[in-house]
Length: 183
Image 1 (tube, rainbow, N blue to C red):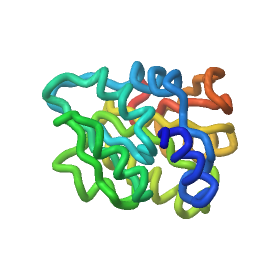
Image 2 (cartoon, rainbow, N blue to C red):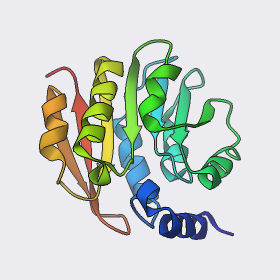
Image 3 (tube, rainbow, N blue to C red):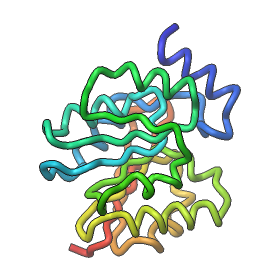
Image 4 (cartoon, one colour):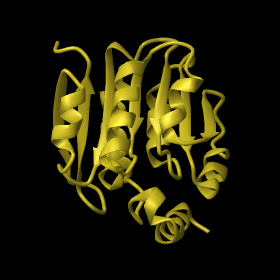
């Protein structure tokens, strides 16, 4: 069964986890990967890795000493992710909000496709606070969303928030690029 069909099936049966029935396109992945800071030896966090559409693009941009920690709560998606043959990746079946427990130090980048639009206000604030506290001073939080509904809540947590429109996806969407620093 193709990954797209598996995502569709999981999306329909677990819409409260996935937030969508379609995986992100490679264009979303490429756009997010280009925004990722590239510092040697750093650990990058991916929240809501799904079937790996974004993951594969991130791996293309990492150097040999960087690591990618992929958080996913869907068992089927975790099994698909574990088939990616790359020593830099670690798949973690855990709630995305628990990612700071796995960090040895602050990270340069948190990339997310979590469906935060369906989270409660408290869940959004808790997650965004954890992300902000886990980022190094010039680190980036890169979030894909289908709407601008959460712009104000995201902006409130970071010193700087930019938006990039991504039309090349089954459902067009937006990438939020957030940093703790203003420069």
